[in-house]
Image 1 (cartoon, rainbow, N blue to C red):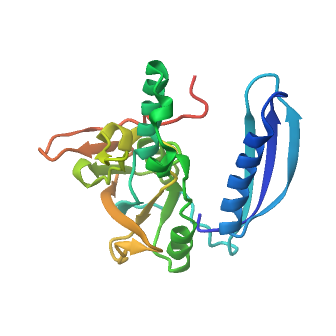
Image 2 (cartoon, rainbow, N blue to C red; image 1 turned 90 degrees about the vertical axis):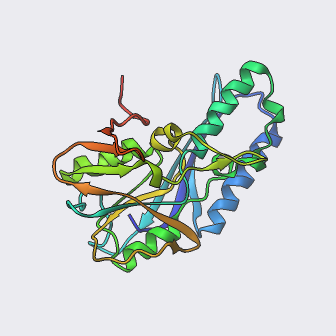
Amino acid sequence: MGGKPVAAFLSLALPGGLPQSWISRFTRGLLSLAEKYGVNLAGGDTAESPNGILADIVVLGVVPKGKAVLRSGARPGDYIYVTGELGGSAAVVRMLQEADRKKLRRQLNPRNFPRHFFPDPRVGVGQVLRQKGLTSAMIDTSDGLSTDLAHICEESGVGAELQAEAIPRACIGKLPREVNLEFALHGGEDYELLFTAPPNKKIPSLIAGVPITRIGQITRGEKMFLTNPSGTRHQLKPQGWEHFRK
């Protein structure tokens, strides 16, 4: 929404036998990221978990009254943009699942997969877009491009058409290789920004050091489509994370 984060609240439930070293590492990581963005850990709660680690984090932010960038402002003809690259986090999750089955998880170095293990929120980009009045609607890609674009379309009463070859796909691994398009379309947890802007707004190719890519256009109607390099076009269904899907 283009806001500024100011405070975080952490609720943490931990198994009784969890080593203190894990708790210390977790806390250092959280406080390090909070300090980077000027966020205070303002409170929360701790409890014992009968099984597994449970963490719930709420972040509060501020934005000038009436200036928040909502999901509902996209209009037909607006261009669609994303920050950074997509699909990296979901591809790493798949690798971890396969490594578990093959008992090879220890061979995966987190430093080779920063977008999954060390996500960096695009706070600066969102603030620039809001301050300069460049964007008509915005959301992050925590649930996946297809699902989060569907949220914008639903709230704005519009459709969308994406160009498959334009979608920036992440490269992962020690010897980086590009992820499959399906991960970029439907994988979540990238925390990139997905936004729309009128054609008369000049969107820089780089904002706050982050690459910006135009990937499609808002259309009339309420359906989303994906056009491939060959020119074939098919309806794009949201296949990312749905919080209330049975």
